[in-house]
Amino acid sequence: MKVVWRIVDLLVAGLLIYAGAIKALDPVRFAMDIDNYKILPWPISVGLAFYLPWLEIFCGVALIFRFLYRGGLSILGALLVIFLAATVAAKVRGLDITCGCFGHASQGWSFSAHLTVDLVLLALVVLLLRARTASSKL
Image (cartoon, rainbow, N blue to C red; front, side, top):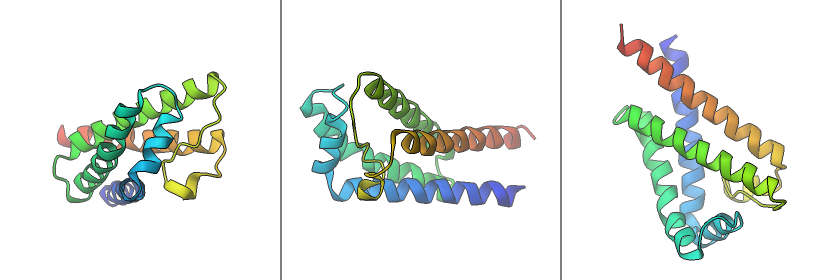
Protein backbone atom coordinates (compact mmCIF):
# COMPACT_ATOMS: atom_id res chain seq x y z
CA MET A 1 0.00 0.00 0.00
CA LYS A 2 2.95 2.32 0.64
CA VAL A 3 3.89 2.06 -3.02
CA VAL A 4 0.43 3.24 -4.08
CA TRP A 5 0.61 6.27 -1.75
CA ARG A 6 4.11 7.05 -3.04
CA ILE A 7 2.85 6.99 -6.62
CA VAL A 8 -0.01 9.34 -5.64
CA ASP A 9 2.57 11.59 -3.91
CA LEU A 10 4.63 11.76 -7.08
CA LEU A 11 1.63 12.37 -9.34
CA VAL A 12 0.31 15.21 -7.17
CA ALA A 13 3.81 16.66 -6.80
CA GLY A 14 4.43 16.48 -10.55
CA LEU A 15 1.15 18.22 -11.35
CA LEU A 16 1.82 20.99 -8.85
CA ILE A 17 5.40 21.53 -9.95
CA TYR A 18 4.22 21.69 -13.56
CA ALA A 19 1.41 24.11 -12.69
CA GLY A 20 3.74 26.27 -10.62
CA ALA A 21 6.43 26.32 -13.32
CA ILE A 22 3.94 27.35 -16.03
CA LYS A 23 2.76 30.27 -13.88
CA ALA A 24 6.28 31.22 -12.74
CA LEU A 25 7.37 31.53 -16.37
CA ASP A 26 4.63 34.09 -17.11
CA PRO A 27 3.74 35.92 -13.87
CA VAL A 28 2.08 38.81 -15.71
CA ARG A 29 -0.39 36.43 -17.38
CA PHE A 30 -1.00 34.76 -14.04
CA ALA A 31 -1.60 38.16 -12.41
CA MET A 32 -4.25 38.84 -15.06
CA ASP A 33 -5.80 35.42 -14.38
CA ILE A 34 -5.96 36.24 -10.65
CA ASP A 35 -7.41 39.67 -11.41
CA ASN A 36 -10.17 38.07 -13.52
CA TYR A 37 -11.76 36.82 -10.30
CA LYS A 38 -12.40 40.46 -9.27
CA ILE A 39 -11.75 39.65 -5.61
CA LEU A 40 -8.40 41.32 -4.96
CA PRO A 41 -6.88 44.68 -5.90
CA TRP A 42 -4.40 44.60 -8.80
CA PRO A 43 -1.26 45.14 -6.66
CA ILE A 44 -2.13 42.12 -4.51
CA SER A 45 -2.86 40.04 -7.63
CA VAL A 46 0.60 40.92 -8.95
CA GLY A 47 2.25 40.00 -5.66
CA LEU A 48 0.44 36.68 -5.53
CA ALA A 49 1.36 35.99 -9.16
CA PHE A 50 5.03 36.12 -8.21
CA TYR A 51 4.62 34.23 -4.91
CA LEU A 52 2.05 31.46 -5.42
CA PRO A 53 3.80 29.58 -8.26
CA TRP A 54 6.93 29.18 -6.15
CA LEU A 55 4.86 28.08 -3.18
CA GLU A 56 3.27 25.37 -5.36
CA ILE A 57 6.69 24.29 -6.61
CA PHE A 58 8.10 24.20 -3.07
CA CYS A 59 5.14 22.14 -1.83
CA GLY A 60 5.53 19.73 -4.75
CA VAL A 61 9.23 19.32 -3.94
CA ALA A 62 8.29 18.70 -0.28
CA LEU A 63 6.08 15.81 -1.43
CA ILE A 64 8.83 14.30 -3.55
CA PHE A 65 11.61 14.53 -0.96
CA ARG A 66 9.35 14.06 2.11
CA PHE A 67 10.84 17.17 3.70
CA LEU A 68 8.18 19.27 5.46
CA TYR A 69 5.72 16.79 3.98
CA ARG A 70 2.69 17.51 6.17
CA GLY A 71 3.23 21.24 5.84
CA GLY A 72 3.38 20.95 2.07
CA LEU A 73 0.18 18.92 1.98
CA SER A 74 -1.56 21.30 4.38
CA ILE A 75 -0.61 24.35 2.34
CA LEU A 76 -1.73 22.66 -0.88
CA GLY A 77 -5.03 21.70 0.69
CA ALA A 78 -5.59 25.28 1.86
CA LEU A 79 -4.68 26.68 -1.57
CA LEU A 80 -7.09 24.28 -3.27
CA VAL A 81 -9.93 25.17 -0.89
CA ILE A 82 -9.32 28.90 -1.47
CA PHE A 83 -9.17 28.41 -5.22
CA LEU A 84 -12.35 26.32 -5.26
CA ALA A 85 -14.17 28.97 -3.21
CA ALA A 86 -12.94 31.75 -5.51
CA THR A 87 -13.94 29.78 -8.61
CA VAL A 88 -17.43 29.05 -7.34
CA ALA A 89 -17.84 32.68 -6.19
CA ALA A 90 -16.79 33.92 -9.64
CA LYS A 91 -19.24 31.55 -11.33
CA VAL A 92 -22.08 32.63 -9.01
CA ARG A 93 -21.34 36.26 -9.89
CA GLY A 94 -21.54 35.40 -13.58
CA LEU A 95 -17.86 35.89 -14.36
CA ASP A 96 -16.54 33.87 -17.27
CA ILE A 97 -12.98 33.26 -16.18
CA THR A 98 -9.95 31.30 -17.21
CA CYS A 99 -8.33 29.97 -14.07
CA GLY A 100 -4.75 29.81 -15.34
CA CYS A 101 -4.09 26.72 -13.22
CA PHE A 102 -2.12 24.92 -15.88
CA GLY A 103 -1.31 27.85 -18.14
CA HIS A 104 -2.46 27.67 -21.72
CA ALA A 105 -3.13 23.93 -21.41
CA SER A 106 -6.21 24.63 -19.26
CA GLN A 107 -7.60 27.70 -21.02
CA GLY A 108 -10.14 25.77 -23.05
CA TRP A 109 -11.48 23.86 -20.09
CA SER A 110 -15.05 24.33 -18.95
CA PHE A 111 -16.02 25.38 -15.43
CA SER A 112 -16.94 21.78 -14.61
CA ALA A 113 -13.57 20.50 -15.88
CA HIS A 114 -11.70 22.99 -13.69
CA LEU A 115 -13.88 22.11 -10.73
CA THR A 116 -13.39 18.38 -11.28
CA VAL A 117 -9.60 18.61 -11.51
CA ASP A 118 -9.39 20.73 -8.38
CA LEU A 119 -11.79 18.53 -6.41
CA VAL A 120 -9.81 15.43 -7.38
CA LEU A 121 -6.56 17.12 -6.36
CA LEU A 122 -8.09 18.20 -3.06
CA ALA A 123 -9.38 14.67 -2.42
CA LEU A 124 -5.92 13.24 -3.13
CA VAL A 125 -4.27 15.76 -0.79
CA VAL A 126 -6.75 14.92 1.98
CA LEU A 127 -6.22 11.18 1.44
CA LEU A 128 -2.44 11.63 1.55
CA LEU A 129 -2.72 13.60 4.79
CA ARG A 130 -4.95 10.94 6.33
CA ALA A 131 -2.65 8.12 5.17
CA ARG A 132 0.35 9.94 6.62
CA THR A 133 -1.44 10.54 9.92
CA ALA A 134 -2.60 6.92 10.13
CA SER A 135 0.90 5.56 9.39
CA SER A 136 2.53 7.84 11.99
CA LYS A 137 0.19 6.49 14.70
CA LEU A 138 1.45 2.95 14.17
